[in-house]
Image (cartoon, rainbow, N blue to C red):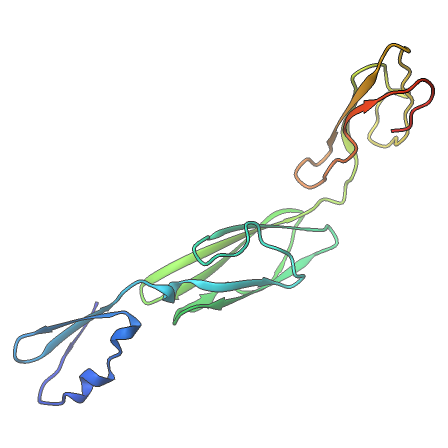
Amino acid sequence: MKTMAIFGKDKGFFTRLKPNLGYHLLIISALCLLSFSQVQGQTDKLSRIDLSGGEELTPAFHPDITDYNVRVANSVSSITVSATKSGEGTIHGTGTYPLEVGDNRIFISVVAGNQTRVYTITVRRLNNDANLSKLEVSAGTLLPPFSPYITEYTVNVGSLVPNVTVTASAKDANSTKVEGTGRYPLSTGRNAL
């Protein structure tokens, strides 16, 4: 809280204060001792966060949400973060950041008076390793046996097996999406999955 003593009859000071900016005024005694404090409001929030590659924040940006996630390809080695404030605060933490494979945390703060709001962006740089750590079928046996470096297999099943379920796990489960798993109906003869 700031305190200011006003002596004399200069009423012009009161017209220079801007109550619509969120100040509470308190006049004490005939000496016109004036105390005011700024009320927390929009001055400590961001109105926008932008990332250099146009990546989307998850969840979508909202001034009251302070934690975000972003995934970028392995080829992205740095990211530039810019932000716009909605009030009179000062923004810290914008700029260009190098990215390591995995999670990288970026902190952007808005400081207004003695109040600070911190926004956290976790940027996950994906691993370039698209190999599997596991590949299994619900019926039959993989031939040759599973290896992360083999991409074609044969599975022989009996003619009474109506379907097969394929499950797989990525070597780096946090950064690689596995597609093609699930239950597949089988017909007599060769079935390519």
